Length: 132
Image (cartoon, rainbow, N blue to C red; front, side, top):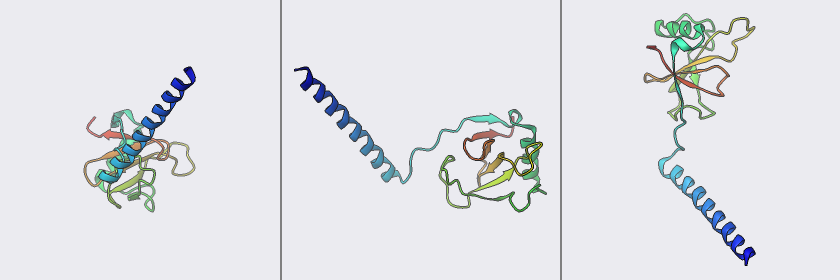
């Protein structure tokens, strides 16, 4: 008797899981994309001071420390930022003191008013409020 009840519970749980997975696929197919990533917001003043310097350069239109790389299109291949058309995002180096190369820190701008920061080379992002 217990075995039959246990099998029914497992079967019901598996059926529920299948319904959830299929529902998620259906939502993705209908909307054309997955749910937007949740990105916390942080004040520009809470980031490393080099981020504020880079932001001032972006607002001024340069000159940038890495002219071949700064201002180039950021493709958002990892899909960690909201999905936008190709060419929407651009990246800028946030220098890391003592680094022999560009390092992992970047500011990413959107064609709108979006501003994002990554300190770990696109693994995680925070939305940046440049007014704070």
